[in-house]
Image 1 (cartoon, rainbow, N blue to C red):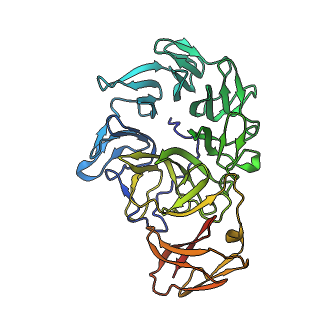
Image 2 (tube, rainbow, N blue to C red):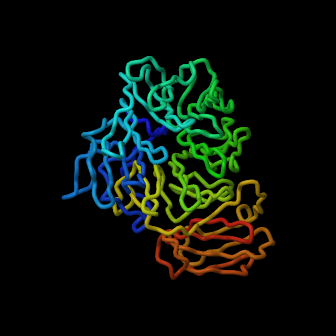
Image 3 (cartoon, helix red, strand yellow):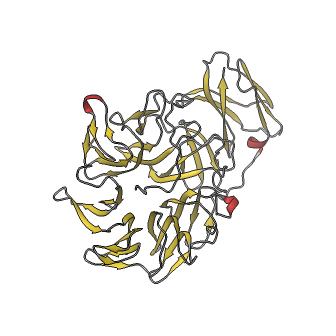
Length: 450
């Protein structure tokens, strides 16, 4: 059974309500069923994928895959005959591992996947680096025939149990931060010592906050960004968690990143860096918004330590990305849903630009809220003329920008009036984005042109 993410998913095999043509392109014509996880190997310039699929590619390029496949720049390679199908890939520095009934490591010299550990009837769920050793987590009672329960380190020769407590299965991610070992997922310690997140200081296990007690949610991913540990998963502020779906931790204090996303139904799945920005993928619905804004959350957003930003990649209800990464300086994503009318099958690259639709200055900055609270835009949907009306008289330095779904600017208006009318009769029917901004903030609104 694959354990690449704790999220509970519902599979929607439909096309989006809004065309994504041109924004995403299938890689190698995609795979035939959902992708759960992938890792990009910069040394070989290959992408290793695991999921629920049985085939990859289409037509003359179709191959049998059975849950494991490699994308090699312009063709697919099958490796399911080498590895167990109940496997997920993990990258640590430049080393590649396969978790599952056996733990394997890619041998760079021979190209073989060498077996490091066997878990009997159990399995390994995730691994990480800790004090220059390999830390192993999963649902097992032995390693290579010797007793060992659920958590161990490996120094290249010997396996050593981490502590003497029993933790319920459901490990999703683990990471070393400030010389301590953090584990997370849908996990719990049988005596109640910790739940959701546990931390090992080299001698003892302890809890990270007490808000996980009673929660049915868990952690999907850890990531260290700007010297803080970011935590993404399924949890909500209403249950005393530090934020909705995402928060940061500096080893002592929590930062809720302005409360997290504006929906208790939000799920943050993966985090990675692209050109210095943190990219956050997730599963979203049509009531999910950026922090402290009325801007809908798409399937991925960026965060630079201060601002959350959205891009031209609006996704419809029930959609989202499980995994993201960078391949040949291009954003790539894995999903459990077919995207768009051009059938981007579960593994795709982003073909749009990085033009932001909206950003929110949310971390430690007091905002002027009149853009969000004191603006009326009507009618929407609109046929001919759109009216933008401010209740607040302070509109100095405000300007409007209208863009299409490809991020192309249609027009800009500066020195606006308290009640501004815009003629949109010349536009074709579809979705547009109106950005309203001043010197300190900006908000975006989706406009439907009939």
